[in-house]
Image 1 (cartoon, rainbow, N blue to C red):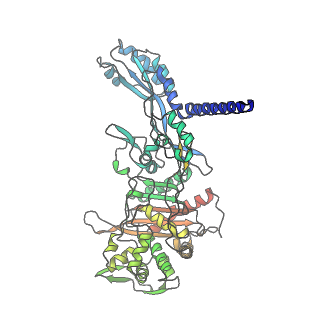
Image 2: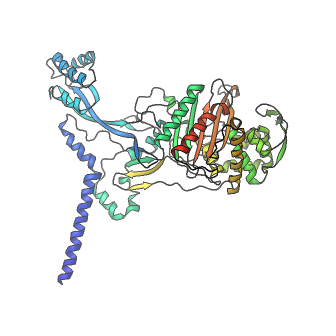
Image 3: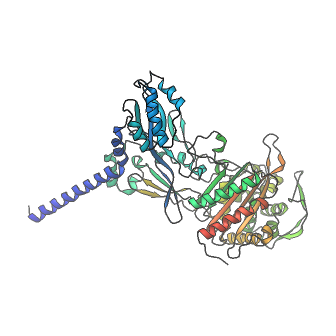
Length: 570
């Protein structure tokens, strides 16, 4: 064998050896880092190895920085061994001094109750203590005072984004995600201690594509589309609105209408996922798990349907008589007044029920039903949250004229707020259904990552229709909303309000004096970066959504335009 050949073989062997060492070091220092940290905890009475561990959920700020929204925190449990305590008073005095020094008074009565259990070798007296207190407590007596390390789920921002994050809970002996992203990404966030070096090494040589599907490597952290400052601003606006009008519930969504990325999602009443929740009714995310008759914001979809099908144009007129009877049922404009001969723009400007009915009748039942189905109003959006329900267009199956008429202005059909936001996004983005989503990236424990980019859905309305309905909705804001005072001098906004009666669950009839208010808008109108959807149920002392939601919508719009430094479009 030639010397040059021997040198090449030796070089290849050296390279392979070094590569193996590199992979092994990576596995030890990155993949198995937590395992070896746990081994270092064996000086404590009960080591941390085998205790709770879970991946982190991050929010991403507009500059790309990550903010932990749900993570794992470490501390110490302090316990006593009553079987070996000879003088409970002396032990208490020593411990209480250390506890007082740490700003955590030790309950005297409870301590002596536990110390009196002489047959019990283990009684906890404090949890989630810091290292300083743990070290001081363990110095009292290694036999009498037992210190162990513990780890728990921690939500640094308290109630922020609670309905998106969800929480952990027990089902029997299983402690895992029960609501929100904690549930839908439970398999990723959970930690499987059995991941082996052999499996990881095999992944490297199989390539990244196959590694991305490996169940051994599915553990990791998730990065959300939610922007922390936007989320807090939305929650603050909702809180102000609920304090002012005391509704039964409220909710809001801020979404990119071009991609479906959710910048903020909030519902009220809220909860703190890091604390025990006593009122379980606040846990479901009603923006995806609730269905509502959303009222006049649906007129924007009805008008888009009429324009896209060619049934009407912006210049089309009709004779508005104020009220109409179909299938022996009378319904009217919100004020019961006739408008005479008016055009399609006034249908949106004045939110005329009879105008929406006129458009629906021109379109025809079958085609109208097809458009509303294409908007996704009767299906789930597929958002990455658990418990999503689909909207209901069941009344359109009755083939009654009155059912189609009321559906045209948002009554009689039950829709989820998330599905409605997705449908409304088509009006501004050229007519395409987008995929609402909260997770944009999974960062696996092996160092690999997966970027989530949902594909663009089907085109529901033509691009020209999208621009025309946008123009009409912009006129609503510039001339009619708040009597024209809502118009922004440098940015065009397309928007519509909605006021709907809702059904008494007992009588199955509409409440005569209770309303659900909704509001949506997107901006800058012709190249929209944001869609904002707001709703409140049964606000006290006020009837119309234009009175309750115009101000929070405008505040939200101004904030987003300023925060993201969106250039003017006029």
